[in-house]
Length: 456
Ligand code: ADP
Ligand code: ASP
Ligand code: MG
Image 1 (cartoon, rainbow, N blue to C red):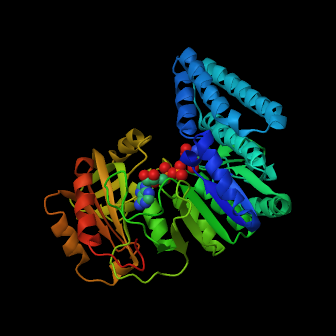
Image 2: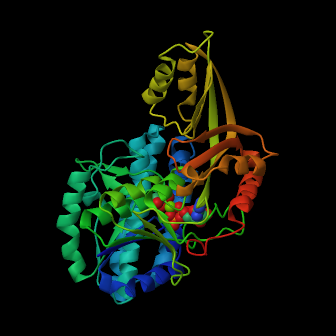
Image 3: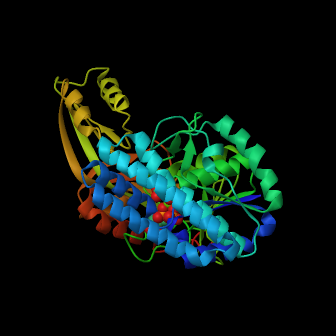
């Protein structure tokens, strides 16, 4: 068995879903379990609709919902067999009817709880997984739809729920393998439900994580993440041209890159894969014959020091200055307790004699955090920062990496630096306005020559 996950752009239109069908059909012998994201930008659109509904823009929300429905109808219509058409209509009708009721309910309540966010955003994958199932049938495959909410069980931390692994693995291993004997299984990514069946989601970009959970649960031979780029690249391609494909990378390196902004992979994806030692492949659904990137357990020998550069935008730096002369013991503890209380993860930390700087990317509760910190320190906040993070196993063994970074960035004001915590990364914080220049210069510095065994 293999897991094949297709992201939003890979299922954004009838033509894209047809490409997916032909990719899956050519691998049917490997007993695929297909995990799909919502079509195109559906999740964003659903969230915008929910937001309009609770902010007094009910009619606009319902209008947007109608447009989203038309999009689903238009793209799915060419994909079904005549004998399935009525069933498809019923699926679309019932889902959009439920969505309409939800939106009206939200408009009355005027309040959007994380639980309602999950209820509404779960519809993207619920719809796409049905549509893809019909499309597979039309292409001659026996396709079975499995409702992810019945097998992916999570806690109730809505919008970023954690899987309950033993329960989920049990259900997956009981349900899925028998279906694969019969045909291709199709499931929605991103979604699950609590033990009492309330819909939950695994966090934005979470379909990659779903694929990996499913892979671990069924003991898959491989987890394939099909997306819109040729694999893990040497830098974020939205930031600069001329990035190269990384052919093989270790789980540890991939996890670090994902955590520091390489959106191509959700950071949690590697966890179940590592646990069960299942290789993960990143592949391009528009160019299915390209080899992609293979993520494996062992370290990968490479002549280059750096494997890839990850960039994380919209970072906020919080500077905390002790109001006493020197940092007393317990100062750091007090600081981190505040972040813990507000469930806000800290990415990077730097400390000096009397001050601590740290970065966060979730600023939802920053005001409350700052108010609490101000009880025992002075606090300042810098927005619009970015992290640029060099990742490579060789960083720990190679002298002079920092010198090369500093000379490449000589004209950029580096706000914070971190190396050593993970041994395989060196990260800098800088103003987001400088990110493109910094990434370009670092890419020129570290990828002007390429080890042909590792890079394309
Ligand atoms: P999907 O919808 O298939 O899950 P995503 O948009 O989540 O796709 O992730 C793919 C995108 O990740 C690419 O289009 C690319 O812009 C972005 N990306 C950022 N960093 C990297 C990187 N280092 N390598 C490849 N892609 C990257
Ligand atoms: N549809 C979800 C999102 O847009 C999950 C995913 O695509 O991975 O975040
Ligand atoms: Mg993604």
